[in-house]
Length: 349
Image 1 (cartoon, helix red, strand yellow):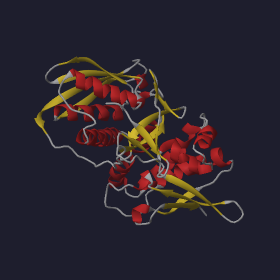
Image 2 (cartoon, rainbow, N blue to C red):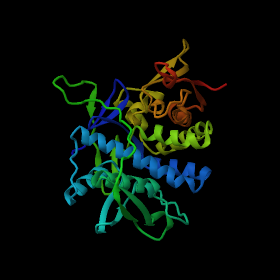
Image 3 (cartoon, one colour):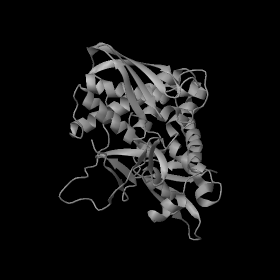
Image 4 (cartoon, rainbow, N blue to C red):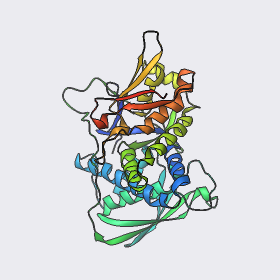
């Protein structure tokens, strides 16, 4: 499948082959897992493995439904999907051996062990979830994953996995991805085709190394966490957001802002597809509030109706000095998840 990535400047979102995605600075997924791991410990493994398996399986299923990919139980299909994952910035997947009941797989330059933090345990929970999603789709059967070696432990240059195939077919959890048709007789002039630069180490967009993830990953993950720790999940979101923002420090954000003719917080839309960001100023030219339309953080996976864009609030707060030259602390004053037409962020008093 050829990856067709487009940016819709009217909505502040990225669309990959018709499905909404987010390009995040490389290291984001590992950072998020690490942050939660410091709070929940060993429970982190099952949470993140399932979050990636469910959202990526759903994403792949939607590509099958729209005939972007065709599933066959053969090596060529595996190679095509491996190539797609490499094109999304997840690393190079390889098959060492396989038989009727198990596979031996490797992942080189994997997104989940990118930072190479030395840990006394295998670590690639999300990479394992990605492999589960892939083989659920190909085989139509459930699979179990076991990481044998991990780059983060220091005992291997690449990550090694053993995948065991179940004999039973199973219905898997599915989450519908927000879709945006990009091929029609009257093309949307707001959709700009985006070049993805590839190397053996990963991919870059706007000169920033990134990983491209389905937009439903965050809503699903935080919905799972909320069931475990309740409203405390929103404090975790905020902390993750402020920490994630530091990953942008080495990169040329002014150049991105100039390319898309935006300033300040508004650059977050072309940076990561968070939704359309509008900085509202007062009569004296000072920042009054930040409004975000189609916020990724407000997408509904569960039935809860409280404000939920704490991750985005943390990102805004963490980037305030880098983008505006002053430290601000923002909170969500209103949210589209409680039937407001957009998410509003104001200064915390």
